Amino acid sequence: QVQLVESGGGLVQAGGSLRLSCAVSGRTFSTYTMGWFRQAPGKERESVAAITWRGGATYYADSVKGRFTISRDNAENTGYLQMNSLKPEDTSVYYCAASSRAINWRLEALYDDWGQGTQVTVSS
Image (tube, rainbow, N blue to C red; front, side, top):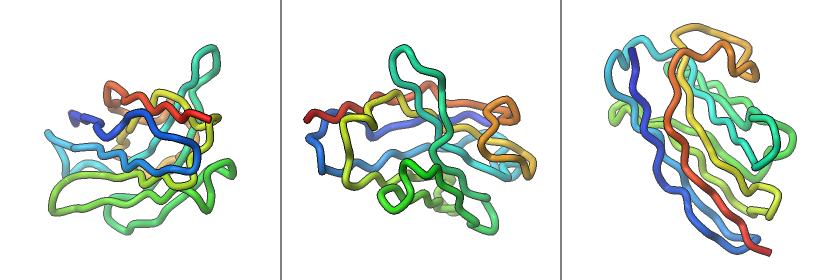
């Protein structure tokens, strides 16, 4: 089992930036894919971005492409989501998730472990 702890959320004005972190512990060697998801009040959780832990291949939702960057530090067992040019519609609880397999990164049901989430609020 893998434990995930997100941090870095907060309140920021539109156009600002935040960097979310996801610290991975436990069976870290089994992590193959890390994904970031978000859920706004009254809406379904949606995929944001994903990265393969070893190869570093990255994937993004169209809504964040060009503004968000996903990365990982294997030595620190930490994943990151750099969020620039934030918009009010980016306001959500952001979750990181890990899978031990190569998966369709958009499908949350395929992830094995989840963090508790961190709130991101973007004011207009």
